[in-house]
Amino acid sequence: QVQLVESGGGLVQPGGSLRLSCAASGIIFNLADMAWYRQAPGSQRELVATFGKGGPTTYADSVKGRFTGSRDNAKNTVHLQMNGLKPEDTAVYYCKATLTLWKTTEYWGQGTQVTVSS
Figure 1 (spheres, one colour):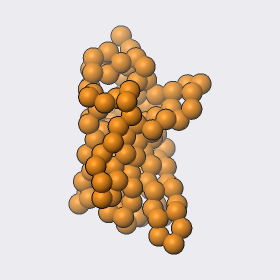
Figure 2 (tube, rainbow, N blue to C red):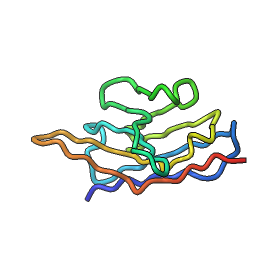
Figure 3 (spheres, rainbow, N blue to C red):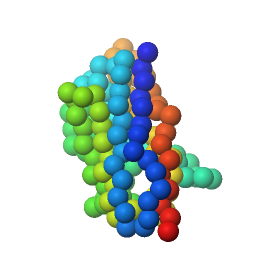
C-alpha cells in the first residue's frame, strides 16, 4: 500500500520559513516522479514544484527564488524549503507521486496546512 506522509506545515509570519517533508512508502521511489501542489481555500489545486526521477527540479513562477526542493532517493523523501513566505502562500500543501509502469498511477498525501499571517 502506497503512503505519502507530509509534515512540516504550520503558522509562520510573513517573511518566515518552513520546511516541508514528504515521506513515501510502499512505492519504488526512484521510479516515481514527485511533486508538491497546494490548494488555497476557494482555489484550484496548483503545482508548486516537480522532482522528476531523472530530471531537474522545476518551480511555479510564483515561488521561484523563494522555494527550494530536494529529493533523497535513499530516504524515499522529498523536501520543500520555503523562504520569504507571503500571505498568498497560505494553502494546504500536498505531495504527489506519479508512477508509470504498464499504466500511470498517481498517489496523493493527506496534505499539510501552511498559514502565513502576522
